[in-house]
Length: 151
Image (cartoon, rainbow, N blue to C red; front, side, top):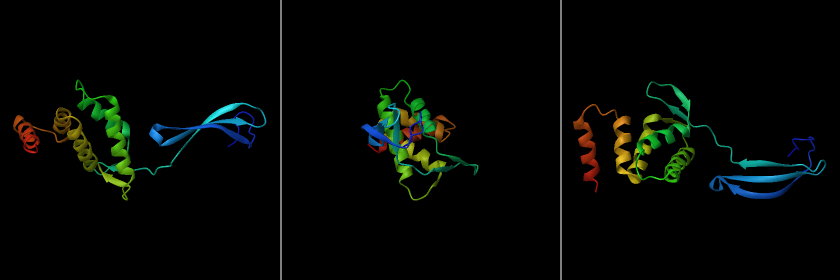
């Protein structure tokens, strides 16, 4: 790794520690020539997952969109942010482990609902009402009845 200060190619690792729940390594390095220290991060290069929208457009997977939807669904619910982040990490990891690198947006939406059902039933119903575009109270009631029937 080249020193960002003097461009010397000889640097040494002073300290390494895992970050991002073990998915990256933070390294403190020192330059053999100028003596300055700097930090680098090492993580696995992941391929981009493309999401196929309902209208056929394709866009890169954005974990922030998933997190935003989950945060809205869990608003004013006793769900810690750490749990929401765990769910997003599980969804992202699952998508990255798939052979297919293009995934329908409906598949991702169903994954989110499945995880929310386990996390918080009220958040699940909130997300489902927006995601499935409930048009009336009867649709809402049917979804709740399905939820109660699975218990």
